[in-house]
Image (cartoon, rainbow, N blue to C red; front, side, top):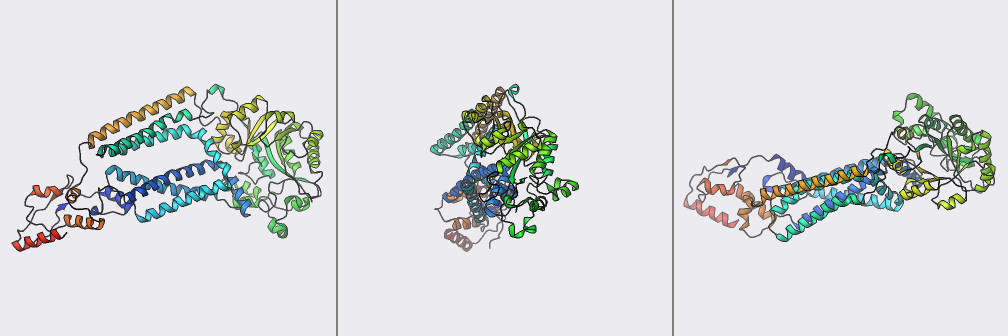
Length: 602
């Protein structure tokens, strides 16, 4: 008769169980393995790594284009006809997907570090595929519909590259522990050579990356120019409904140097302020004149326009997620705004002695004021009494007429042109999107005494880069934020940056060498086979199911007299096990024969 008892007592391994359990749903000890990872699982690890870098790129990109979220929502509005803010939901879902992929990759690297076989659970594989496909679809969509926005990545590196370099050095230095461990464990010279060469190539490339980093904020502090002046884009659209009188007053409270506005001429010849071609987004036209909601804004008489509410939409849609920060008085005032006349804007600008940057909308050919809307607008400006030099005229249409009627207007262009072309046409002001310019453009325009204004600049990091680059003014939705920026976010003299760069590289290299020496000392002379591998290595290769069954039988087998001493049993024990049991009743000859047959059958 045989007394059944566990062969050994196993200490709980909570961390290892959680590691293998979360990654591959292998919570039991007998489910874990130190065998080499299969090629199929290695492929999934490569897919996981690729997905990590892809989602990292997408997450970084979407985080940096925060400056243009309103532009993205406007783009979708033009496509769908419905205003909705998709920028924040995309950011949240991107952050969630990136966090999930990062967690999986860390778990996989921990498996490698402790010598565990990779075995990603099928549920994780499904979610991994979903995240990968969603990221590819998102990036492809941006490429097709908003491809110029990818330029933001290159511009953002001017602000973040030095810090990204430090972060990459920390990551590659931490990775040296795993690389060194694999190098020390491996008995294949070819694998060791390939591994060390690949790792060294990445490390050396990172060490030399700063040689390619170019940022205007790496400069001597005494060469920094004056802070760019701020022009309120449609007023202060985060604090009040855009292109309303309240919005312009809020912008002036932030000490802006100018106001940007979009001018249209009504059906009966009254210039008014409106950005959209229709009134659906920024007025209650669908409640007042539902049958005319799709009609062009310029096709309404002023008597109809002044009946519309131009502020309720701001409270309801909260386009910038800022309504909750407004006082109750501001909320009430915003909700009761009406369409703003050009004369009202000019009176406010004249009173505060600020400039106005006017973008004149073209009228349809069937508009009764089509032939003379430019002269109507110019005469309205002149009659307001605002100094001509305070008016920045953006429209190219009938520019000679404008120059004749108002010779002191600042003529401006919103197209990137040769400085000689601009000077020949008496254009002294260039209004360009920030992605259209570089350091050389800023330098050339400055030498030609041309004022460069960039739009739309909302984030302090972008404002800082343009400030360091020498831009004279910016158009912004966030005048209340940028007006409080006292200096560029960071400014480093070249010598200080070089010192930080070289010191970081030296520290990283020293730590990597120390890690390799330590890992070689720890693992170089130790075979990594566990007791189960030793006992199974003499057997013929079996399927994973057979191997699992053999492991179970080895751990919970009938004790026979072939193992009479603790020394024999210790072959199957690991150093961390607390002990073993050897309480065996000596079996009869039949029992021995039966046990031997069972073992042979396995």
